[in-house]
Length: 462
Image: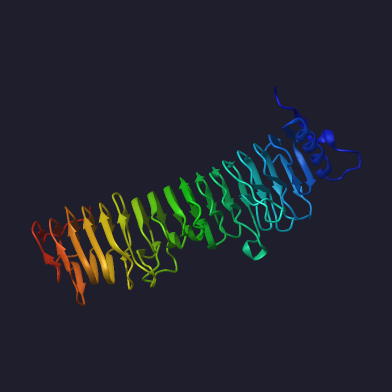
């Protein structure tokens, strides 16, 4: 049997200036009837916080921008649900400018619920939230699983942690398998999209956009120090523009970036004290790195722990990249892999001035104008194979072992250059099966093995 569809205005009594009593009556009615849909017409309505007290209830407006709910000055979320199933809010705008702290939508311990085509404007310190923690119920919790937010927008959120607030879009507190699809956050305060100990969170085709200079926060961030959950997060086809950090990973988050982009950020991707390997496949960092020009252990792409990169490009970058830099922390035997299809226009600093990752493989990567650099990586084993250096080279001082091989090619238009420049002691570098075109010298201190070919003719970059 089809569930009932009712109008919220049918529950409004004469003389009521706000819609809060009417929507509460409508929800109570559908709760008794086992669910249904409450429709809002086009128009602007003043409303306080509303709890959806039954499962299988949908709130539906006439369209984002057509139905506008203006929050009154009470604390609490425009719509929240605790321990419910199949609760949805669709097709409306919520203006939270007068409402303190809480903002638009909160799902606490809900399953198979979410929002679609919702725009939340001017929230004080939170906009879209999903957690195991129930709202306004002390420490009470319930399982949150399989919730989804689609085609939603958050703009103008004013505050963040300093007010006890949250990211504009956040899955946290053990919420499982949350999806944010085609969502956009614009000119907010805080990390725009966040997963904090929320296993299985997926951000798909989401955009974090800051148009007011450089935000000191992150476009996308994932963290979680808890040891009792498998905190995996995936960013697929997501873009960050105008942040201190485009995409950030720390603690025990297990992050995958697929087909992403960062522009006008300081760090395009930052792995900070991350415990697990970060996987990045097909990513572009464009016009990033301002302010990092003088640092050796931070960069456009910067990772303290292991990472695997495939088809990652930097374009018009202003600073170097920094791999396996632990900042004095413990090193790892896990391999850092800079893999096929990667292309960098600035230097890649590897295990620079600290222990870093002990094994680093550069395979099928192109350097255009940038060098591989290392310094005091005395535990580091570097393998460069099948890679292409265009007006670039390798500059190092002290390493446990370095090997350049398997068809690696160096090409330059500057005939005064040395391709592989080593200084101090502990050179421990072998070159074999590689080609050098246009350089004055192949190397000053590396050992040349078999298959090394050098030509002095100058050639243009390829």
